[in-house]
Length: 513
Image 1 (cartoon, rainbow, N blue to C red):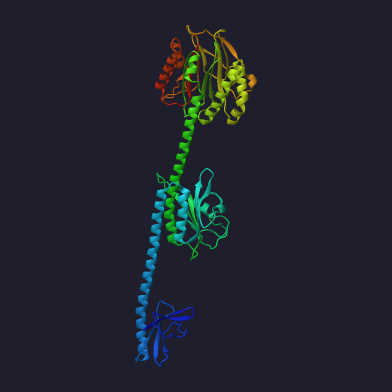
Image 2: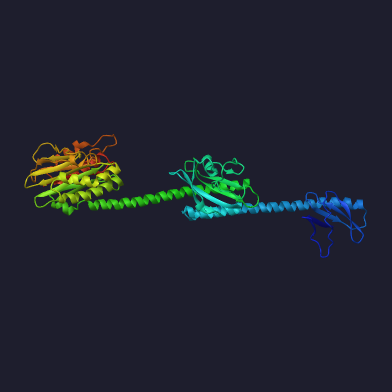
């Protein structure tokens, strides 16, 4: 017996021996027939069932033609079954190799994602590995930018990333955007021809493409899309198989967790940078406040400042102005946090300088408004500010109060606290020419100037009750004969017993001179 194979018009013997005879190409057909050999004897050629172009030669021998034909048909059936088994084994082997490559890819991606938090670096490797395994010429991974509502390319394979623009998630022509929105896998058989491919309007080398949404399950079990994997231009067969779809969907699940982790790491790093910046700003803010040695030269001064955030909008200063005079200011920028602190820093620096080069408090506030007015307007903020100058020789307190509601004079010898009312609107709410000053009598060494910000009276306890001015002033009046810092500490002790939550910046300053 001998097997012959007809391929592209040529005939070859399977496993033929050297010098074996090659029949001509007339073997094509569906039924057996007798063949005359060069030596004059005859043989029988029988097609092998199930394998077009493969023929079994039986003979030459001494049997008659009918016997050879019967034997050839029986042998062809056996050989066809053997070849079919071999083909099936080869297919199974190929399938196992494919599964091995897929499993190996999943393990490799798990290892890649486990070794790095750099999403772009990991995505580049993943795009390449996925494209190779599923036979795609080009691949891209896109991540959702929630703020901009865009799908941004973070990695590509086989295509210049500079050619791929971000895709709006609402783009009706983008397959990638639709896969993201609908959270379904879309391929060349799932969309209408008019709809563009996952990478825009560029032309494809083939019709095969695949867009798979990257889904993050989340700790609460509610899945949400975080990106898309795009594959185009498949090598070989111009379509991605169902197995490829399942594989990419499994990979997308792994990448989804990595994208979420990378986002959380990025947010944590931003928070760390912000905390570092806030800590630096806090240190700068404290450095701008007057040192204890300078405060001690101004007389009996007690002061305490607490910010609701790392930095705040409250500020104060004590400015010695010669032997008989001392200036004191306390301000509160609307709001709190970094923006208020930046304004506070500018205002305190400018006000301290102006307090030395102006003759009256109202002049200092007018010139301060000229310097920071535009900044207040841009930030849509305002600032309440009290600036007073105690002159012990003249026995006066000259002050300008730009909308600061918490300024009081506490007389040494009995009597209630006297409010030092506003002489102008808060800075940023009116023109500089509206700022005027006022005078009150000052008894040196006896009277007490009490300034505080609204973070103290507005503080609320668990029942929603406000601490109020009354509690503070009662404590200050009772302690009017004590050192100023003792009274300040007593107020904060009472405040902390009232509520443990710091809802706004808190500053209290007492001055006796």
